[in-house]
Amino acid sequence: MNKLTDYVLAIRTTGSPPVPDVAKTVDLVPGDGDTISSVIDGLRASGLTPADFRARVIFLAPEGISGLVPYAALCGFAGRRIDVYADGTVLEFSRLDRGEAFVDAGKPSEFLVWAQVGGPTAEGVLTVQLGPGEHGLVSPEAASVIRYAARLRMVPPDSARDALAMFVLVSALRRRADDRFPYLSTGTEPVPVSKEDPNQGVDLETVRREAARYRQEFRAARKGAEVVPPVPVSARNRRLAEANAVDIRELLQRLGSSPDERSLWRCPRPRRHRNGGENPSMKVFGDNRTRCHHCDPEKVGPVRLAVDALDITPDEAANFILNSDRVINMCAA
Ligand SMILES: [Zn+2]
Image (cartoon, rainbow, N blue to C red; front, side, top):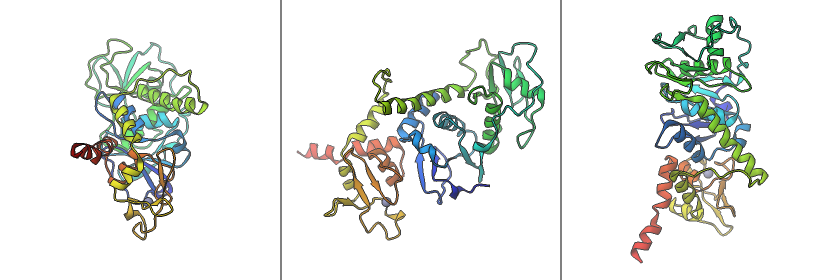
């Protein structure tokens, strides 16, 4: 049984519980706008890279079901299930089997375009239930419906732990080459009118695919391929990129740090240092990134540094960096 301290990196989102004993945390905070594009924006702004997932990573789920969308994005980006800390417990989803093990009752005789799992029985939509509690309690009939329905909407239970466990189980049951994610539904949507009916809740499978596509950008960048069509950049990402282009030494100074004669900087997170950050521990690199050998497992840019040092969201960090005293200086001049 894993403990939180076994993880190298914890990923937080809005409402995640505080955890004092994880080495390093990263924020995945969805921005404004529609659910799917805002969570992908949040993923971009988090600064997470595929390499981060080579370490032991855990997602810190907020109470209730609001962690499902960011969790779906993370799994899509990582290309695997991520372990979760929810309601005070570590859930080792990465160790679950692939879902083929669940016996079903065969393909339903009629082609099922839409079905629902969980929630009260919906009018006009075949609804099945999972057994209570731990995985394994899926009747063969329910497994058939979950596995073979072309589209599945999932009405999760209220608790984070149960909702995430249901999501992982349902996705594993639907697995083809990868886990296939259901729609996140309230169970009160109208009867679906088509296979691609957009009014059936949040399509978590689209979240997964968009996040997986974002992962591909790293591979393309590594190959130096320029044949990949450019991805349109949202106003928010432009702002984050602008903030990341501001001289990181300027940001360090605004955070109260200064260079010593060897061009090493004091860490603006002195609380994490045993001696209060007395000894300069940060090196600035030529790519406008910096790293504290105590706090940062890798080099960080201005936005990530401000997020970490000031405990704010990436958007707030961009505001902080861009609305700097440079503006004041300009007014004074
Ligand atoms: Zn430090």
